[in-house]
Length: 274
Figure 1: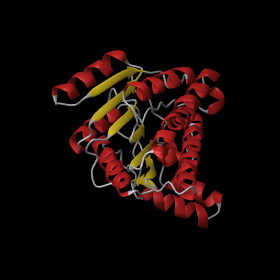
Figure 2: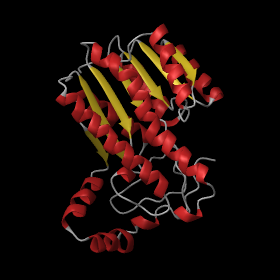
Figure 3: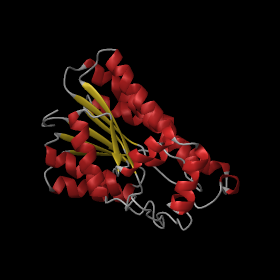
């Protein structure tokens, strides 16, 4: 995909942080229509207004992506009023941390984490993928997962579980599209380390694992998605961790990550977005 001139882009979690950055990047890339989904009405209106002032055609919808019925209703409205979505960016996500799994305040936290981080991207993509399959235009799905979907870490068990689910599902859909011959649709799974959006406030960097700047993550996601790359893993040290996982015993890997590099302590002071 050399450019996205004339394309329709839908972004979830679009009101702030990386979602808003994705929207601005889509505008710069030449998108014809931006569809912004978020549950935060005030922030969504602010971002939509800023984009319109820059000349964008924006449709802002208040959508609770933890609610399957809300997803279905909003998606139907998009199909009826706008048409095919060419680029879908499943960006919405939440994180709960700084407690062991059995100390989690309520089961609701676990259910909500799974609903937003794992189930919502599946339901949303299912709504728009048939339209992508039906068109001959180049289409893209960007699923924002996490490095935590590749490597486990203490004090974020439900989050890791949700992102492992997202990674496995996302890459499976990529393979299904290839097998079915729909090569005009590419799925890119984005797996970054902690990002300085406020969502991971209090989380610590680790050797070889710096806190990432959100604009860098967005730029890399767009670059590799347009190229049709299956994965964006940031930083590259996360790839090294995956290699180590496959060649050394688990006890050795745990010792290196936990005792030597201190990775298992990175969520000890986590507070998240206030």
